[in-house]
Image 1: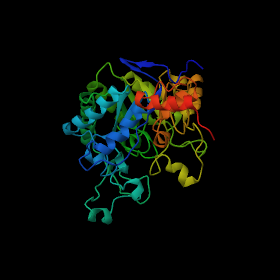
Image 2 (image 1 turned 90 degrees about the vertical axis):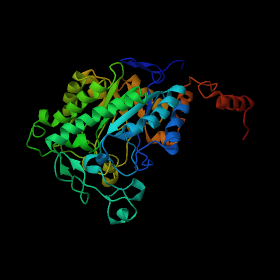
Image 3 (image 1 turned 135 degrees about the vertical axis):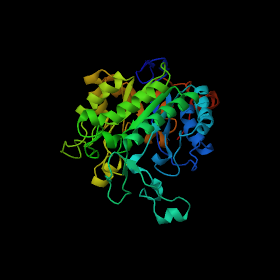
Image 4 (image 1 turned 90 degrees about the horizontal axis):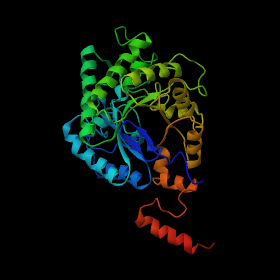
Length: 388
């Protein structure tokens, strides 16, 4: 194979992606309480550019401290975050990758433990260690997860202020030099609690009808687009459905049809691509939907959502979810199911996923895509050969 879609360029607005490989935002919860980039987080992101990814996204950057998942979240709620973020954006550029960031507010899933510490609500034990709980906010004053802190319903004034905070986050991301911005509206976090009728029980202009439930998301998109350079793309991450067909036959939450309607409204407000995930409205995170119901993950289980939105709306999409290797990613693109491929946990397994994908697809037999200080040695070993 002399050419592939996976390693072909793709252009949105003024940004050309060198390949279709995107490292998805992955929460590491390794920042300090100030939310600033540190050396550990720098190396976590930097290695993916070295490893051949066309685009590298930061983990979700919190726009307001009350919206932190944990005390270890990265932030963009202050101008003091910009210099650290610029450091990683510059490194990604210097190593041939598009630099991308994601804006986030955890909503009712705020004030919780780091996953490896329990993934439950903060309590007395954490308070004794200097990490006291706080009250989260959401669309409605009820928790979708039993035993977690009950959120407070946001007032109209608080909604307006947070819309401004998203805009300020976009401005800071631009100042830091990022090329692409993604808004996280999935997995039972704040924006999703407004979109989904499972969580949103409001009776004002932000609840009830689909139009009202979309209002908050659309206002955020408008605010971000107004503060984000016009020549730079804007992505929007959705839980395209609340209930996956392979897990639940009900259809009483947010549906793929709703996602198509929202995608068109977002596109009208300057969103360029839909980042297609699913689930999470009733679980600690999206993958816990599977763990709780003892259902195994399936390869590419979310790809049909990206395919449907792309086909039915004409809006570019990004596929994510158990995409394990280059040939699988190539097949998704060849079938016109998505425009970009997001790699998450598999990149944790193999930070050189992009370089290995090129070899698996037969377009880099001589290690020429690898950093020269790596590739020289690896190509030499190949020429010598290995016995046994």
